Image 1 (tube, rainbow, N blue to C red):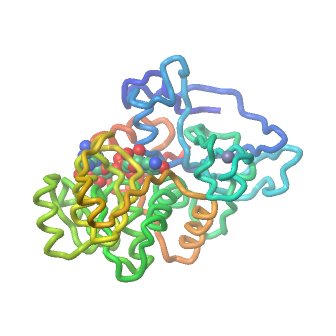
Image 2: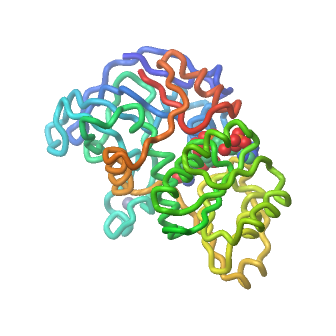
Image 3: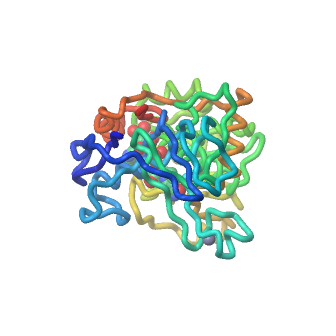
Length: 337
Ligand SMILES: NC(=O)c1ccc[n+]([C@@H]2O[C@H](COP(=O)([O-])OP(=O)(O)OC[C@H]3O[C@@H](n4cnc5c(N)ncnc54)[C@H](OP(=O)(O)O)[C@@H]3O)[C@@H](O)[C@H]2O)c1
Ligand SMILES: [Zn+2]
């Protein structure tokens, strides 16, 4: 079988198509024929050599967390899925033994890690991490869900977003950003989002974004938001200067969930503003398999259509990463092996 492997951690040119033996399942595993696998900034950071998770000694490395496809073969102890079943993978890898695995939520697992290996024609996965799909849910759209939508949904839960709330999403045009806008709308919340691109923001308005702000300057964005009103929740996947900006626009007692560092891995924040305003900053990573099941139901019910900008065959995986690097896309990029 063919895989899109990272053979150099130098950016999109470091992706090569290579042959690997078709995997066999262990007793708790399933082998899935991958029909779609979406990519995330997480994969791009690995590919750019900007991730502590993979170094040049681990090459070639097959990334790809968010795979959807059809079960081909199962291990002897597997009862949860059968060959021929259509599935999407929850990429959470947990130990099953720590207090968070016992009592939840599972994404706090003390030994938490992520599945990688979806950028391939077939993938060997833990069978109990597969979520079954109704027949009318498309593989490409469902492959968009696991990392971006699950993370955004979990963050919306953590900030307790509800009907009529105002949610601020700096950088609203990528995977997590678009997911945040769409899911806020399904909850009845209003959203404010930013981007450097007017054209991308125009597309977001049709996906439920109510207040679109073009620009990156925190002072300007803060002024525009102060005319809209106090924000109840912030979904911050950018870090850097956006953390204080989020705190500035948050109402007293409001909550900001933080999941990423695209604009900077450190943020300076105004401590008196934090405590005098009773504001909460909440770290959040991925979500639970239950979150993913909820998202699949939303798609099946027609309440959510994940936004997929473009699909690429496996041989063009490097081009998909180049489009992500160039900030050309809105929503998700999906590889169809
Ligand atoms: N902790 C977790 O569990 C978790 C899960 C998923 C994602 N994340 C993190 O969340 C972040 C977003 O991931 P993603 O896959 O959604 O990425 P993505 O699709 O590449 O996000 C693109 C968005 O980020 C904005 N952006 C890109 N570079 C920027 C910069 N230098 N300054 C300001 N804005 C910038 C883009 O703005 P323009 O519209 O202006 O181009 C666009 O809105 C990443 O940091 C990722 O690692 C974390
Ligand atoms: Zn655990």
